[in-house]
Image 1 (cartoon, each protein chain N blue to C red):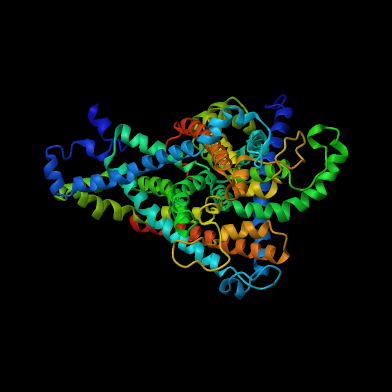
Image 2 (cartoon, one colour; image 1 turned 135 degrees about the vertical axis):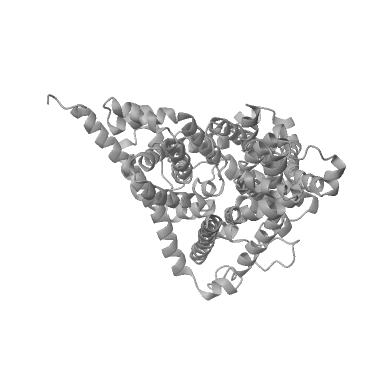
Amino acid sequence: MSNVVLATPEVPFESRGLDKKQTWWERLRKGDEVVHLITLAGGWSILVITGLLVQHLWVYSRLSRHAFGWHFLVDSTWDPVNGIFGAWPFVYGTVVTSLLALAISIPIGLGSAIFLAELAPRKLSNALTFLIELLAAVPSVIYGLIGIFLLIPVLFNVVPYVQKYFGWIPIFNGTFYGVSYFSASIVLSIMVVPFIISISREVLISVPVSQREAMMALGATKWDVTWRAVVPYARQGIMGSIFLSLARALGETMAVTMVIGNVAQVSTSLMAPGYTIAAVIANEFTEATGDLYLHALIELGLVLFVVTMIFNALARLLMLTMKGHEVVG
Amino acid sequence: MSASYPPLSRKITNLVMLALTGLCTLLVLAVLLTILGYLLWKGASSLNIDFFTKIPAPVGQSGGGVENAIVGTLKLLALASAIGVPIGLLGGIYLSEFAGGWSAFTIRYTTDLLNGVPSVVMGIFVYTLVVLPMHHFSTLAGGIALGIMMIPIALRSTEDFLRAVPRSLREGGLALGASKSETIFTIVIPAAIYGIITGIMLDIARVAGETAPLLFTAFGNLYNSPGWMQPTASLPVVIYNYAISPYDVWHKQAWAAGFVLLSGLLVISVISRMVLARGKKLSHG
């Protein structure tokens, strides 16, 4: 039994006992230990960098943390001139745009993933997935460019009709300036949809055929099989892809900065301009005068870091069940 | 045959829902083609020779180019690769060939988390690490920011491709009397080299478009930036600054820069996939 365990590729090379008889000195002389130590340094540098990152965010946000405490997150006055910093408008904007983006991209992404995994012939599916993954390779700043010069002019034509018929609903009223929570959410949803599609498709494909055949044999339609037997089986991986997308949407900077309007206010209307955490950092960081201002912006970075780390960690945990699939991106 | 099974209502649901999934896919593809097509149309029509050979013209004048930003981006990428690639390679070799147990788990998990750090936070980190002590923005700081961002993917893709090398190859090397390090460098790494190169090229393509970390590290520059210690322009930052400016001339330049940047990224991406395909062919042939 122990032989079987040792033969799996997950067991690291060294622990297979192939060179146990050599002493440490012999391995050093043959160069093995030198290589070991050098590569070890490469591996551990990741831990050093991450440690430094956390330490720097913590130390360089101390003035703001000490001055405002937890109120920093819920106060809505952002007044650099008088040194009063409350981040609520940015927190609110980040949460609203990210959730709205997910609300748009989850149904569309899941629908596409189902089509690509269950309906399309495998060759066509692979080709289309390759194309869709190209969307993920487009830099954020180019989405911003498209957002400013293509999406916003289109929205200027569409939004008046929406407001004419649905303007009585608070989330649609108010003057539309082009830049808004809504525009930012649409750009974000386009940016995260490739992640939802490519990961969900992978999970759906890996669902065992027997799972489908069992329900097929009971006389179910293709859709019944997909929706009641395949999707529930893959739900952990799908949730993982959603958390990963949420983490990306929360931390997305350039595209959002370019279309959200950068106004530090809290509005019920999605058509109003707003601000996000990442956007305020991008806009004000280089002009921050005074240590408290800088520390407040770095504290925003710390908040963003902690929140995205939580969702990333959740996503990785959920996807641990998916063997052999790597999430790059 | 009595009433057909499944009942008509479920057959209709089936057709409607399946059609909807197809429509979702079409919608995503349409968005993709619109973005690429619009960028191609706007970008190509704004391109000219000056764009590649001249530095920006003063505000209000037409003409000029972004030669300084193209050079700046190439310098930033060279520096980032010099930092990110060696660390990524070494770490990948360590994870695949040496590490086990908690050490491997910790490094792997931390690497994945580092990969998920928002790029704007990485910019803050390098600002406090490099720019604050030096008191000014520089190519060096920008290169370090991009270099750190390269490490996680370089490391994980190297590890994956090394792990995919069959165990029998390693045993063959050891059976011939080679030491472990000789086996790694003469057998394992050459067997995985096409994959490793592909991973690194895709990694470079990814950081080439990063804007947020450069805003507070490399900053920007209207002129050429000699050496490594001065602020430098880069294509992504130029696209951002020009796009939010009020001048039509600059908007055109932003489109041209976006077109050049994206074409570069897509070319790297396609070439690296071809390298990988060729590697697969060689190793099976």
